[in-house]
Amino acid sequence: MNKLPISALVVSCNEGHLLEDCLKSLSFCDEIFGVNLESNDNTEGLFKRYANKYENMIRVPLVEEIHPIIIPLLKNDWIILIDPDERILEQLQNDIKRTILDAPNNACTYRVPMINYFRNRKLKGTVYGGIKYARLLYKKSAINLSANVHTGIQMKDGYERYKIKFTGDNYDKHLWCSSWKQLLEKHKRYIKGEGKSRYNSGLYYNAKEKYKTCIIKFYYSFKTLKGYKDGLTGFLLSFLAARYEFLSWNSLRNYTKALKNK
Image (tube, rainbow, N blue to C red; front, side, top):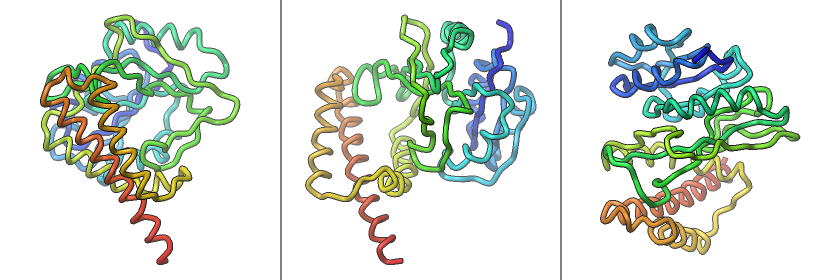
């Protein structure tokens, strides 16, 4: 495949054991930009080998803090934001090529099929499993950037979101979590930023709503999205999804209190 006018941004902190396969799957992009967050493994060496450019930066808890700094430096208008634990399979690479060539002028972002793997097993259900559509491909000139958790990239007025449909083998393979410990650590990092993010999205703390949404999240994950197909793993993942919702509401409450006490 010829190189496409796409800049791929990969941020890694001691994820060298995952990084090489990710970088290899980006070989169709004409720019790969790596960010090394104080890694003490082989991350920097892999960026030297596979990336066109890379920066060494101080470690931050969330990748959203990196985006407003580095994305403006990328040379192409079309960009891919990807983590070291993701791999773009060949058929999806071909779909991205066709998408770039035929994209309408008002296209801002494309969601692509993603399949999450937990402990090296493909998840069948829960809010984390099955065929997900994840934002991967963005037009840089059509987005606004901030450091907010999960909402740090916002579409400008006049643009639209599109998606590449799943056809069987055209997906982003996401080695999501290798252990329960890693999942809990990931949740802990993101929950810290959820309060600010939710507040900036216009949400206000409501105890009744907190318990209601937690119950709904568990039911939706385990029953509606067929988490039961994953057995005990599905039950525990659904419970942790509800727990994340609960703790995120608490984070919003604490953030709001902190603002009032300033």
